[in-house]
Every structure is written in C-alpha cells, then in structure tokens.
Image 1 (spheres, rainbow, N blue to C red):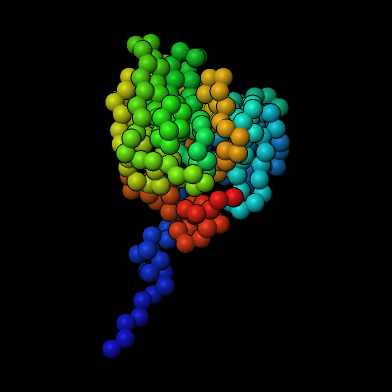
Image 2: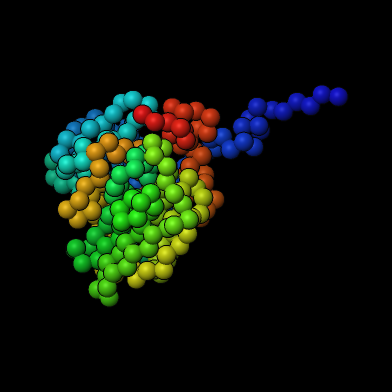
Length: 250
C-alpha cells in the first residue's frame, strides 16, 4: 500500500510560509520592496498610514531580500515631516502595542526600536547593546528607568531574525524571536501617550555599519504568540536561503 502526501499539506506540516500577516490593529506595514519610490521617506502600506523619514540618505538595497542598510555614522529612520513623508509615524506606548522587525544580526550594536514621548518617557529594544549577543529592553519614565536583558536567547552572527516587542499596556514587555516566546520583563510603563517611532538610533548612538532591516510591522494591540508566529511564517521561507532564510548572509 502506498501513501500519498499532498504537497501543500506537507509544506504546512514542516512550517512553510502560511497565509498573510495579521491585519487586525495593524497601523504600520513597512515593506522594503514597496514604497521606496522616494529617497525622502519609506511609504507605509497601511491606507492613510503615516510614513518613516529616511535620514542621511540611508541605503536601500534591491538585492533579495530587499532591505535598508545603515552606515554606522548617522543613518536612521524616524519622524517624517512636510516634504519628507507628511506627519510623523507615532505609537502610543502607554497602551498595548506590538512592534516587529526583520533584522540581520551581525555581532554589533543594533538599535531596533526607540519610541520617546517628549524625551521624558521612552521604550527601546536593543541587540548587543550592553549585553553581548542578547536583546535588552530599556524604559525611562518619571518614576525612574529600568533595563532587562534576555539571557535565554543568543543571537548568531550573519543571521536574519524576526524580532517582536509586545506591551500588554500594564508594564509587561515581552520579547519574541521568529514567532517564539523568549521572555517577559516587568518594567515601569511609560505615561503620556504617543511618541515617534525611530529605527536605528538610540539617543546619540546609531546602529552599527552593515546593519540591515527588512519588514516592519506595528500594531495598536498586544499580539499573541500564534499571531506573531503567523507573521513570521508569512514573510519567511524556511528552506530558502534567499528570503529571510536562517542561513541568508548577504
């Protein structure tokens, strides 16, 4: 007796690419293969969504996978303005939110996300900054500041990762990598509302030369483990080293 396995079913079983990304509460969908028609800003693919300004002529690579590459000197993505993509892209960090980014780790400092409310309250997610090959969440509020390094996961050099930061709205910040839960930090929650999303800059420091980022997804809700896994699978091909594959080293 022979057994026939349908190709689609086999792909799903092995963890191949699933359906589209989660769209509920999606306010930022920045795709490095779309919305790159201007050197001034990165166009948000969410209808009527605000854009990210491209500061200091940050390089856009058309190679697969498409990505932005930082020079380590002054490149970053941040608040748009008139003639540079319209109004700034903001996220309310007092409430629940989720920010996700494809980033290529290269054994250097990566300032993945930074959102500040008038400079007095902020939340950031950094890689290799302070703790080698680890992710660190940092907050600063009127009540003080806090840092939490996630020692249970080590980032490998020359590897793409889908890194997600989830806030439940009550001071619990969770880290997910490639859709898998890594841990939660209980830190003082920011107050004051919305701040500008910045990628590649933390205070006066910039992501290291050669840093590459791909898709960025932003939600006004705390996504679940399964939803983040769906996003990861929707933008990753497990057996293809050319599309955010684990061994892609370009």
